[in-house]
Amino acid sequence: MLEHGGELAAAIARHAHPAAHWIDLSTGINPHAYPVAAPPAAAWQRLPEHDPALAAAAQRYYGSDALIAVAGSQAAIQALPAVIRAERVGIVHPSYAEHAHAWRHRTARALAADAIDAAVDTLDALLLVHPNNPTGARWPTAQLRDWHRRLARRGGTLIVDEAFIDATPEHSLTADAGAPGLIVLRSLGKFFGLAGARVGFVFGDAPLRAALAEQLGPWTVSGPAQHAARQALDDLEWQRKMRTRLITEGAQLGDLLARHGASAARGTALFRWVPTPDARAWHAHFTAHALLVRAFDTPPALRLGLPPDAAAWQRLDTALAAGRAAGLRLAP
Image (tube, rainbow, N blue to C red; front, side, top):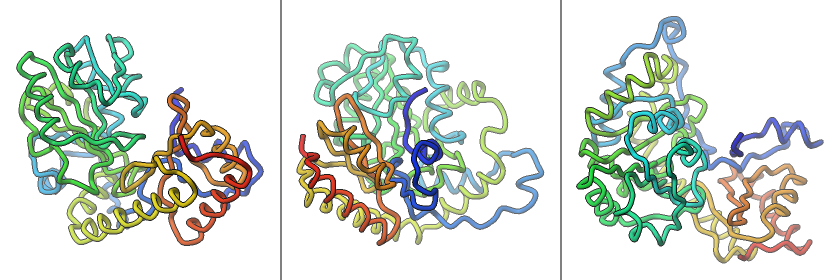
């Protein structure tokens, strides 16, 4: 089993803190989730059908009709190796571990972010999380398009997982969707805070979408999830306000960490990545304060999401100060 954020029930079972006292900062999911209205009874009672209103809302939001709905990005991550002929696959490291796991039966190559350009002409597929999870690394749109062009002219594929791009949608490649050799993954889990709904979209050319539909089978997205997604994608005012809020709070988190010595912290509007040799010790320290964060070993680092309210911000500040007083470092 791969380690993931959000495993709060396991943390509660292992430690003495009451469940209500925990604050989960481990996932990078928006703590201010979209306020979904309850679905109609028919959404629970009927098999889910293709929803033209959802498709139209997604096309408006993402700026492309070259899409297929899936049960979250994870469903697509697991299915893509079955529908893409690619033996030599480059995957940036560190990154979301499920990608490398899905391609483990191919010749998968871990790439440092600064080694991509030199390697791209030797690959059948290049897989990027953009912005990267967990490091927050980004690449210029012109660079991404150049890598796509170089791969596609040899029959290769650029796969871009944009799970964390919604706060800065101007950097998305969905406008290019439909071109051969380009696949883009999007999800409602992070920006909209609807990870439990399991709704996402895959953007690609028609043959790719047909092959993916055949691989995934019918009823990929539940009726209640379709209802929730349609509301969220159509609510332009909520989206506008939330982008502003998340960018502000992401900067606030960066400032807080910097005040406690995390000079190398970087990330997205929804999380900060902190390289530190004391990552596991910090994880244990935060756990003692009923704060759940992610710790990584290669390289050693922490990832912290946004606190949900003022009390949680104060508890994080207090825990950071206590950790520094105990001799823990937040510098690389």
